[in-house]
Image 1 (tube, rainbow, N blue to C red):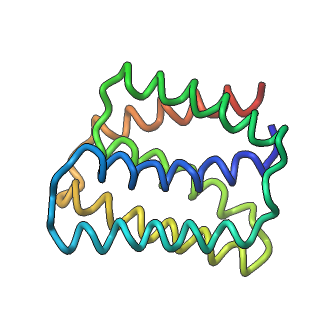
Image 2: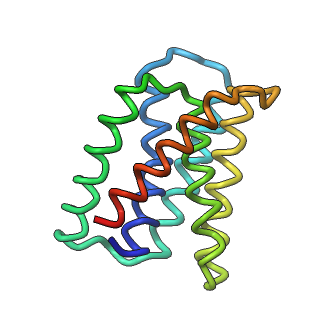
Length: 146
């Protein structure tokens, strides 16, 4: 799959974390809500930097997400795993983006997702989440290369 698909999929995945947290928690912590809103805002901004997905691209994205979600659910991952996964994906992508506008958009998402990660892993001691995220990144790369 293309770099475009990889980038858009990563942005969507960042948004999916927000949806999952909103759906599965009843936390009214204003700090968490602010972080989640920042992720949503930065993702919406990032979409304006890339063209609209075609039907063919959308089908590829859906196939990727179905496969990844099955894997992530089977492994009973925590929010820290999801944030580590997106941070790792963004870290890889940012190095390849030359356009400063697009790069800034991805950096905004990176910063917001990192803030969410720190919300859940204040001491950065959830090493199991890193291991699970690395496994997920390997599977993601297998899906992308199909």
